[in-house]
Length: 256
Image (cartoon, rainbow, N blue to C red; front, side, top):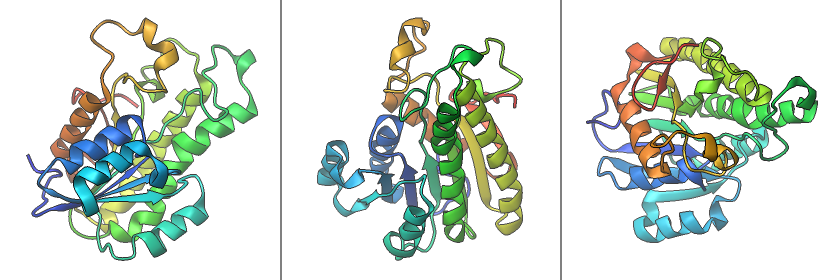
């Protein structure tokens, strides 16, 4: 299967949140493919990440490690004007950003635990960073087949919310879904070969899920490498006709 629909030749790929968890697993899986020419690995400390350093030892110049705080527009401006200056087009961009209980965010059980600080932290990483990344990369997505995918979450579905709780996380992912859907409409006009997707990777064994893994049913906690493979299959299965849609790891659509 082609990396993305309509692609002929080797792909230029960018991964946001690449230094750990699913983002790191995506870098490893994509670099192992013959149809990927280069992977740009973005993280706040990409240059000092031991895991990315090991991938660089294995794959050499095919991996470009870039320090970039995706929540900061000046950092994103520098990314495009300096670090990506020699890149004419990106075929695949995946934002693997997400926090639930880190960096000031909280997994609230009730309204009494909700704070402005937690809301702001959740939205900064889960919502604002992915859409700002898309905004700044837009000049590199205007021609040829291209896919922009961001990791969302099933709990961001309003229609599927039956348990409540996790106010900040749910709301930030729901807002991300709306932003991605809206962006897909604009990109369809700018580049008919462009695809924008919201993807749910399933519950994955990462720092985000660790405090809650005891409640995950047997067989439903995935290794990052498994989730990465499923996400790559999803971007290969869904092209422009599916732009603006929301998919789970098992290739089943999720209601908004």
